[in-house]
Every structure is written in structure tokens, then in C-alpha cells.
Image (tube, rainbow over all chains, first blue to last red; front, side, top):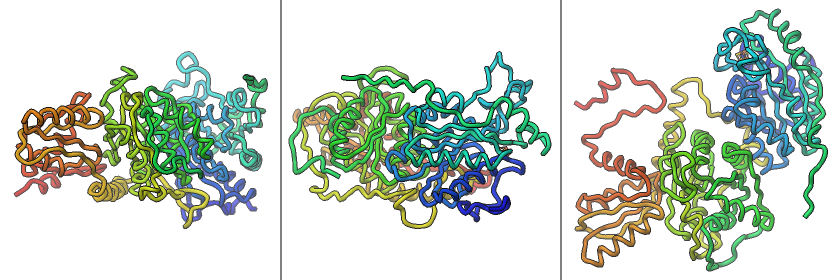
Length: 253
Length: 356
Ligand code: SF4
């Protein structure tokens, strides 16, 4: 497939999409579209998106889709999957939805090993609400609520989702971080994540992404921030799950 | 799916157990729940009974998750429900609000406890406003207030049917007394009483017919929202005529109308009977649907009672406010409205709305 062609699972009628020029969302969704195509899953998939800029994806795919409330995409997909195990369930969320307002859902789904795939877009900011600090905002990074740069004394360290989940999740879970600056590897991670769901397990991929609008960066600065700054604090790769859960503690009655 | 109740069976059990049996008998497929007193035993009984009847259960991480996971189950076409109380009812407003907007047949049983805040785990009727009007919306919900274990059984079954038929979130409002006390009732198989299957069907995903569906609850312009609300409000008004239920005891020429709902309705009914035995001409009205409220029947009952009213409830006027609204509608000459949900209003529009 050429870099320019649309994945078959995309909804052509909603293109061109509504994200800002230079936004990473479109690239994550391209990787997801290609992953769905490769595994021929679009007829079996329900796609659910969060509030925030991810909601702009509510009609992005030619698959049954749902836009939910902030942080609640995961429980909706958990409920759907439990009731209909044949379904492929994809929860698409931002870093605010997954790591702040909906963190309890993310951790609980990973611990329970719910067979859904969560894709979390990390662009280090609350984008749709106008660029406030996210759990993933880097130290020193300026946002509307950290106008002098994120200060460790005030707000702690940026949240490392895959690392945290890897320690807590069920050992069968799949956990990874990719980046929109390397779209083919990101697609591979998403394929693996979907495959793990098909095997009956939880999967999670964080995608490092861009938000030139709120970063107030030009193209070169945008890619520089993504490839140099973000990627050095947030390493891409796979994170073997269950480090903290391998010793099973089963009460025998 | 194995039938939970064959024929008719006399039983003596707690209200929470009644709800679990009612959901089984109605053919509910799945319960998503989070512990909070006094509704816990609904989950306990359901969880123990579910495997035998091929039903599912998930204990979630909080009430938000319980509500939204129930929505997920419903979207897949399963008859799913949850139960909660008190601060849990507060958290449930978020999923209920989404269900209201998206017309998702979310069924929740509420066993009211004391409020505000943590208060008591025992009893109150203080969740009426939340049940009827909670959430950032217009209260497009169906709320049944039950007064006996038989009604808990009947209306829990009915809640599933009504929710799926009319596609409004539907609440069964009990309380801590009803939840915990034991009482006799008749369990029955709803199919043998003329109820068909709950008309559930997949809303998203597998087994659904038709083209790809994109569902959302967010709109970019006021008019889009106003149009969606206009349709829902019209559906709600139309459904209300078919949905309202109440109990009336009395006749024309009454001196007073006693109004109460839920378990207080029992005490009020007994009091009215006692007073009537003494020769007093006191009438009794019990709304069974708090939303939509049986306004017309209430007006007639009030007229039959000479216009005098005694409202009784275990809350500081939550039913009272609903009654006041019904009264205001009666005096339509002096209470006029210009309602434009979700859109702005100009001075010109207000001038136009002022009667000549
Ligand atoms: S505000 Fe940022 S995240 Fe949102 S669409 Fe624009 S670039 Fe993308």
C-alpha cells in the first residue's frame, strides 16, 4: 500500500478529517486503519473514542463507532466485550482520558485482562480544551496551566503509562509505546495489540503524537519536540507485562 | 437461556432478592455492579444465581464504570442493568446523562439511603430529584417508585420492557427499607403473563442489520443539539401518555388529597383508610411513575378533593417540587413559558412570546 492511499477501513465520507494540519491523530488513525485492514477486522470491530480531540474520530472509520464521555471509553468497551466476546473492541483515548480522569478504568481493565485494545494518544497536553497540562506534560513544558513551565515541586513527574501498566497488568497483556514519527513500527505494534485481543487478552499501545496548535510550533519544531524531547523521556518499544503479578496468589479452600 | 421462574410461586424474601429474581425472570443477560449499601444483595443474589441461568456479571471499579459498562453491554444488544444508592446515584448521573442523550435503554435499580453525602445506609426518599432530574439535561427518564415487594418485582420486569421499547433510561426507585425487609409476593414468569421477550437488539457491532453506524453525543452547533432534543422531547411527551401510572383511592366531594409515593405511600394509604373509617372524606393519590408524572390524573384527584393537598415524603419536598410544577401547569393562564433547551434567546423572541 502506498503512503498516500487510504486504508480500506477508513470512512471516505468523513475525509478530509477534522484534525488540525500537522496533528498526529491522523497518523495514529492511519496506522490503526492499516492494522485493521491487515487483520481484516473492520467487519468485527467497534471503535469507541473519548472526549477531547480524539472525539473528532467519531466517524473516522467505516466501522460501527461510538463517542463516549471523557475517560469512559474503556468501561463502555469492557462492558460491550463482556457481553459480546466475539466483538473486537477498540478504545481510543487521549492522555487526559486515559491517565487522569479515566485512569482507574485503564488500570482495572489491564489488571482484569479484559480482551480489549486501548490506544492512547500522548501529545503532552489537553488539546481540545485549549492546551492545559496533561499527566504527560514534560518538566519545563509551558501550557496554559503551567505558564512558567511544568514544575516538579508543584505537579510531580510526567506520567509513564506503559511502564506503570506493565507493572500492574496481567502477564498475558500486551503493552507498548510507539510514535507517529515511525508509522510502520507503530502499525506493527497495533497489529500485535489487536492480535493479543483476538487471543483473549488486554492490549495497550501509547502513541507519541503531535499537537502543533497548542505547542505553538512550526513543522520543524513540532517534529523536533516529538523525535528528540518526547522520545527521550518516553522510550518506544514493548513493555513485558506482569512484572508485579507473576507470582499467583491463589487461596485454596 | 434457562427460564428462572416457571409458573407462579409464592415467596418470602428481601427486596434486594426480589430485584435479582425479577431481572432473571425478565430475561436480563448481564449485571454490572459496584458495592454500596443498601443495594448490595441485588448483586450478591444475581452473582450466585447467574451461572445457573447462563447470565453474566462483572464487578467494576466504581459506579462510573458500572454505568458505562452497562451501556456497553446494552449497545451489544444484551439486556443489561445495574443497581446503586446514595453517592453511587450521584456518580450514576454521568452514564444516565449519556443514556438520555443517546436514547440508550439503561436500567438502574436505586435503593435510596440517607443524604446528602454519606449520611446513612438505612433509608430515605431523598434521591427523587436525582433519579428524575439528575444529570446535565432535561430529565428524559422513566422513574418507577415502588411501594411493595410485589411492585418491586412487577416494575423491575416492566422497566426492561419499557426502556427497550421507548429507549429512555429507566430507573426503579426503591429504598433501604424495601431493600432489606422481608415480605411475601408472587413470583411469576412474565411470558406467561403476556409479556413477550424484552425487545432488545444490537445497537452497535455484530449481528446488527443495516449500514455502519456512528453514534455520538457531542454537537458542534446549537441547532444540531436543539434538533436532537426537540425529537427526544417530542418522543418523551408522546410516550408519557402511555407510560404514566398511579394509584387513586377516594371519590368526588373529598375534603383533602394525601399524596405520597413509594413505601411512604403505604403508610399514607393506611392513614387515609383509617380516616375514612372515621367518616373523614380524605382521598389518596400515589404516583407510581415519578417521571413522567401523572399530572392529569393528579389534577383530577385534586379537584375531586376540593383543592386541598397534603404531601408526605421522607425528604424535604422533592416530591413536593414535582407537585408544585404540576400545579403551576394547571394554572396555565398565569404560568407561561418560553423554553429553548440548549440555544440562545434574543430580546425579540421574548417580546414575541409576550401575549397580546
Ligand atoms: S488541537 Fe492539537 S490534538 Fe487537537 S486536532 Fe489540533 S493539533 Fe490535533
